[in-house]
Image (tube, one colour):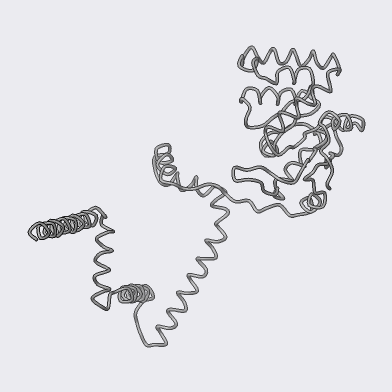
Length: 330
């Protein structure tokens, strides 16, 4: 779809004509969210006086506990236009105020980035998707199936709407076919982000005192459940390998246990690696010694190089002096 982007005020007017407000309009960048909220507010100055006064009262009450929101540049945009921008670039107190206004039904639309879909529950009748790309610190990328399903899952207010609506707004980078594919795609597999670092273990030990409690906490983590099947599979493969080793030893008439056989195999592998990497000529031995010297710290090597350069320079100066003396004698 190669069509010009719809102005925010016109978009909200069209949604209002079909009774599709309130709405969450997902935009790719924070700057575009702020600009769209300001543009939409200019075209919605009329509005309902009763809802405006309700917004004013709630915002003033909230500002008494959080005075920093009074100087926010979007205070008048939100108060008069009934729209707001919501993204990670705003103050935490301001984002909390927008969430309260939306939950109270005092806003007609918010313009937000895709991160809102993962962490905030805004009651909205409609979700508007403007493109299928997401902005990251390394450039642009396509939305994943899980991200898109989280975004569209915000459509529909619990207890008020029987169905929610998803609108693909026209734009230069809009691709309805890809949106349809994402809707029908299975969700991406969940991957645990838990990493058991030294700091994590020390903090858990400091909080709980012994390894038993730490092990119990780790066993309840999603990372443990995620890897449990793999652990069981690896243990099954290990047991099968043990049986094969024992069978081979029995066929060979060797009464060694499998553990001793594994130790001998590791020793033989280490010996092969050492012999493979050992130098076979004087040149290879000298190269290996120089590499070890550099590995222990290149400072000594650099000093030797410096001394050699100094000797060469002094010899050159002596040759030049002898040459000048010969010329003078002649």
